[in-house]
Image 1 (cartoon, helix red, strand yellow):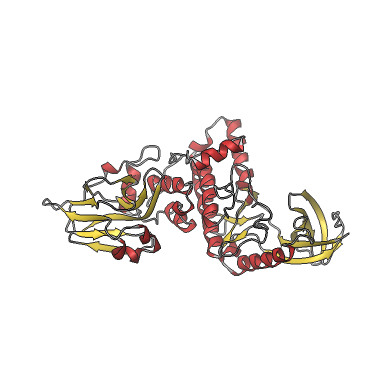
Image 2: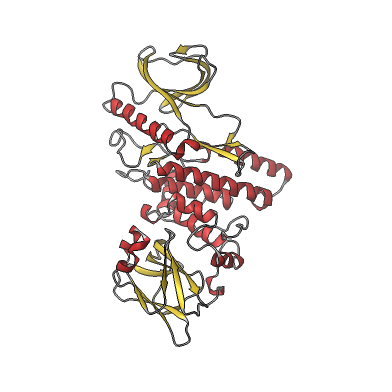
Length: 437
């Protein structure tokens, strides 16, 4: 039977300098190589070498480590520097990771802020300096998640304590991010060897619906759900589903109880409070397919979303506590209009046009959710553009998230999509703007 290492013990080229303590799956240590390089060493209790999926676990970890090292995720995720099997009282598996220090995890930083504001009796979420810092953290965090997802890696246990931030004035953001505790992360395109043998790692109040559904497998969209919870904390000042009772937490999550948040500050142009509030709410959809991608969230935080630009600035100007009032935008009276898709493509229209799957395939795979005959865009006699639904379409036509039931005048920045209003599902939103006014 394997035994625990002690300070001063040597195993291969590593000398143990600190024992961090046992976790559920592994015992963690600080260690140094003979050259003085620090590493974070993990000795695995689970899986034990007698477990049927032990060998597959080692191969899976090697692939996971390689994907992080060889992709853009290497800048943002803790890097595996070694992995080996050794006899220490018994056979066991070890992994060594780069040692992160000179910073703090996001949970520590938020706790310190709350304590500071408690002492000074200020409202932390209304402090302009805090807002600017939280917005920076949110952007850095989502950049890291987007890089991780590019490598088809699912963190699967995101929470503020697993986002480690290091102050670095040499880079524009001012912070380096290291995503930590990734030894039970998942490959998005390969089933985990422990599937069917034990559950997936997760943390109370940060589990996605997939974590809590029997037989479901957490995927990239599961990370996005937890990102949404963390972004609510950073940008709205509260966790929308926090509960001491995890059965209550599950009911809130599955019932989509959260509302689009009122942000704690004003998004700098060209980003808009309305779009950020909307995308954060979409992150929490119980339907994984309805959640945005990490890249989309990062783009909207920076004002590069489909509705950014002039229309985004108008939306921000007409926002009260983060909720937009589209009716205040300018009606579109022009010879032509342009539809901007989430993939950056655009379509110009100057005559009556029926929108449907054949025409919209250029905007990406979500065009499959549109019927062949979904809705019609046309100008009325006063040159005002209107959108009308086509009866019998499988999915609802949505304008700004609301079901279209009759002809409706279009305004600058309106977003036409398909989905289900009641479930908060909107597929492939197309932003409308005037041309040649």
